[in-house]
Length: 260
Ligand code: ADP
Ligand code: MG
Image (tube, rainbow, N blue to C red; front, top):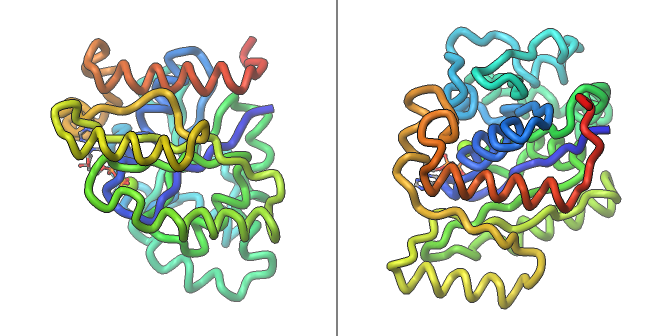
């Protein structure tokens, strides 16, 4: 059975999408059958993996609301082991339309539960909000990765996110685990970056991944080619860091590959 990991932080620009794309691609390179679900109306993961969001008319949202089978909207990517459920801009109004549904927090879970047999990992890229779609993702997930940028105000909002996770664990998903806090955009030359690493490790101890993602221009350039960094600059320090993260997660989870 595959593992569902949500990438969440209601703060924008902390590296959620970069992590979703590149972690998923790295797991795929390690021959884990992997699916990325883009649950952000900005659809950056969709375009970053080579699909034009303007040509997408069905996303996870239509599956949740209109009962469309998610298996029908799985797209291939350039990597053999990596598939994508794309997003598009119309997801913006989704939360309002969902308010009247029964079990509205559990729609995503219902929709993707069958996919666990088909994939080793399902990675959900969340939007920068703690709205209903993110709550759905956290309710569907087995665990959550929280990217934290090595910058000013790194810890801002983290208390609120951890509190939301606690509420979801109490009410909706008692088995939800924190897979780890991931330090991103680390710059070894900056004192501030090093201070953030120290502070986060001091507070959160072994909740923090050993792997730290460096600031690396290739990671920000790769999406404009519609590719994850590993397909574009495999030896670059950004791609290597995400490969290390994938290794850390694979080792911790010790899954039996569905493909083997
Ligand atoms: P989020 O999804 O949390 O809003 P993104 O992953 O889109 O964050 O990252 C925000 C911006 O920072 C993007 O332009 C992205 O390319 C860039 N970025 C993210 N991680 C890195 C990194 N490690 N090094 C350099 N640029 C990065
Ligand atoms: Mg994003």
